[in-house]
Length: 201
Length: 242
Image 1 (cartoon, one colour):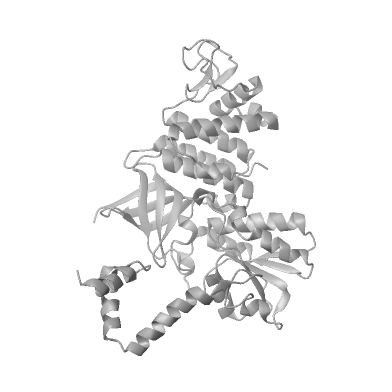
Image 2 (cartoon, chains in turn yellow, orange):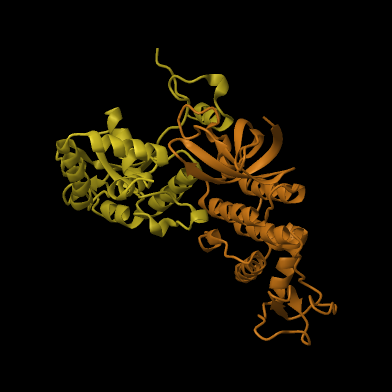
């Protein structure tokens, strides 16, 4: 046990995800030895993230203002919405540079065992966005696990009945690039077969 | 490093750290097991979809101090995938998995519970019957296997031959007019018929039942299960009854 301020810092750091007591101690001593300037910069970053960051009114992604950078960008295609579970998924899709439309963050997936039903997600907000009539396509990009698949099933059923003209698509599922076929599990390999495409010579 | 191999149904998964998951499963020979599957959330994981809830797998683990670690998995039946393609079946399946999770005991062979759950999941995946009926049939039989078999014909207290008019959860099912505790419900005679059909597996009678009696039956089954588990089954509230 250290005295006062050092121990307080170690305790606070130890509450962060993935930081155990030893790592917390190492970070605390690193901060003690660092320049005062560096520490002040970290402190401002920490206070600002809490004060400034909000959730985009339109898509629910993390944003600095009322709308996030993607929703506010006039060059983005506002007729396509990609539905994802978490803000982290937006970043993952943005990295591909394949998609030029907008996003909608649900804030999780339907999981009755954890007490999360469709009403706990931002489904109503999605339906409000679709009510404008500008949207042509909804791409459902929830995680390819059981909860994500069930959320996709729920959404597609809901969208088909309420907005019949809308194109609803689901991300393809298949073999990871750089993987081995023999190690692929049956369901993934089965989906890869289901979604195979013709090779144009 | 003691290794073991068993057939298992994945009941629930929890995220652990960056890319790992804690898998809670119902095994045939060792009851409820909690094991860590390393790196399953990475796209390059060798386990892939095999350790998703509702999958029946052949699993190899090595024992740890409090959590085991999954080393190899083979799929025996990928029911989870087919179930997730229908929202009603999915909500029914999660309620079954949660009930199994609460009923199962650690380190005890659970062959009957295992076979019952595997059968119920197969029925959901193959769309043999209405998902709501499959769920109620599973719930009634699961508590029966666990030792709290309800009585839907003879009186649960004195054994007087039925049929009776009243149903009491605390008493254990149908009660005669003499034993009837205050606060017992009085379901329709058809509901009693449906409940017995679900318990005994008479699907013809069950499929011919009226939606009104099905609703009444599922209400009674839910109350009965949760009374014996001594806690709520959260997924039951979110079951999509179409």
